[in-house]
Length: 307
Image (cartoon, rainbow, N blue to C red; front, top):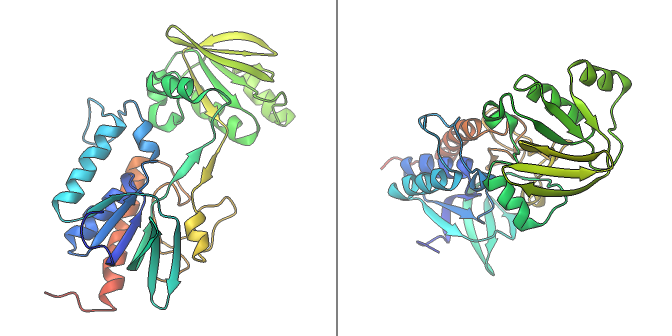
């Protein structure tokens, strides 16, 4: 690990856009901050994004994260590429457990994000499909790129229904593929989709392969090629560390925060996808700026920060 991390002003857990933005702000506030990055940021899997402000030609996720790391490092933040295995509270301090040791911090910011639920397919094939833009996880990010193309949504229930309504504004050639068999939709929802021209393909889904520039989905309803597919299977919030230290979570596992991104535990903050809201780079960056400023202001009440 870089630097003396035994006594931090703030430990930032998560090296995605939220965590790195918070580190930049905290470092420029002249606080001692380390980002603990386990390398699992969802942003790293973005093959090319065109909705990050300031990059009209688009930018790869790994390149964006590299730029953000360099920016934070320039102002004195440290980045430790390691897993955090635990967080505990001792008096007014936190103990962050990494690599068999504990690091003390006055404050902790959780930027741990979420994990997408993937369709059943080999990891290498999945990653290749994502890299080629044939498997996509965020219609908010890239619905524009699939305009007027043949698109499949893999999923069932209310989440898949909402995603179908959202994507229908980009293309008429939209298909909802049930992965297990039942669409788990009401008669009203099914009627609504049919009125919109959404094709319903009953499962179970048997296989997913790549065929040239298409993604091929085989199932009980037949074999079809699509220009791209969106898994609408939900995601799992990586809020376990916050729960470990006693923070209150929402019903869907997000870390509960106030308008300044403070959790229910004093000096524990959260920003990005692990907080309820729009899972977007821009909103994560904004939340991180708010959280970092709250951290600076809250810590200044403990010890005068004037030079």
